[in-house]
Picture 1: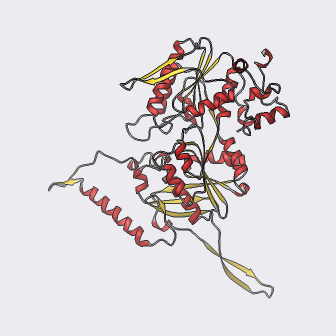
Picture 2: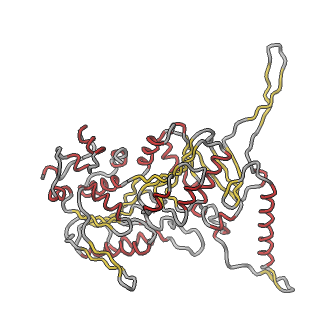
Picture 3: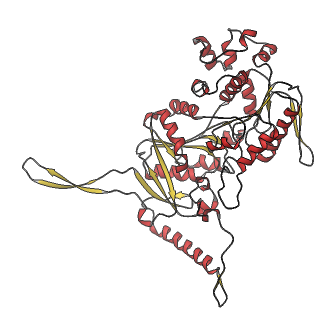
Length: 477
């Protein structure tokens, strides 16, 4: 077995029969490179990844077991439990001295407990004299708090990065970080894997006429992510922008016309009025839903009057007594902070959804499938508003919501599934989704990305290049 331990460029050197085994027999890349054999013993499987231990945390055990199956090994034994007072206890059940240790712990609904569990597990492995400790975090927690969004706020993602390094992590592997600049928070190497090739492969095989589809970003902050996917699929892209500062004259579709002169054969000149096509469609959003062009003006005026009375009451609270002393309020809503008021992360907050806004699509989706792409789906408001605008006002034939991390906070998944303007919800399994909720949602599709993490772990263990991974494993999933 010694000549199988160090296989350079394993994926690229597979023969045709081995590629077939890799794709259709659910084997790991290492197993596919071995000669055809019906079964492998436990000792042979251990020889595939010698001097390597993979620990699976409690945040997403399903994904961790899939990664270990792809590697052909069993998860390393460890006891993870809680005391009666809520403290986390970790006990490693195997020697890790001078071995490469990989700890798989993703984000989850119980984020804080599982972060503490990860830190303690890293510290325990460091105390066990592990040669190298790699934290595999498919969905990085606190990713949205990667910059200071309001006064006296905290950059929590940077603090978490410091905690991981201080605990003893030598390497971090994640997927589709909310902001790629987060890699600068770490003083150790970070591999930010991409789900884009996997999502592009799914779109090619499951969306009819995907060549005519348009990839749409629901906010300007996701433009780079959308253009990357559009380039991989060789299709067009569009962008949606929501604004609370637009004037009433901008509501509704704009249909400019111009006079065109036509010279007939008899020499007469005729003037024709031609409606010019536009790639900018605008509509109103009231309480999280898009209004039609034909929506009654009474509803909008009533909402505006209500908002005006609310502001008037707020202004009157500043003035008290006969001297009309001005007393500024020290409490501000997040949406009232002006220096970062256009942050896309605030789109789904209650204050943002309660206000009346103008939604604008820059691009053309007429009679085409629209694919709304983002890095995560945690709340529903912005996705539903975008889907309603694309289908009702912009003429999109179908609408799909595609993201890497399906967080689905509260009733997000139910609301997206019940929206008649959304035809499909596609996410990966980087974040745990309850089986009961997944079965109830008929529109949900979960893509397995465990082969990507398994191959990344294997390449890192054998000292091979990980950059080849992005092109080589796009078709394995």
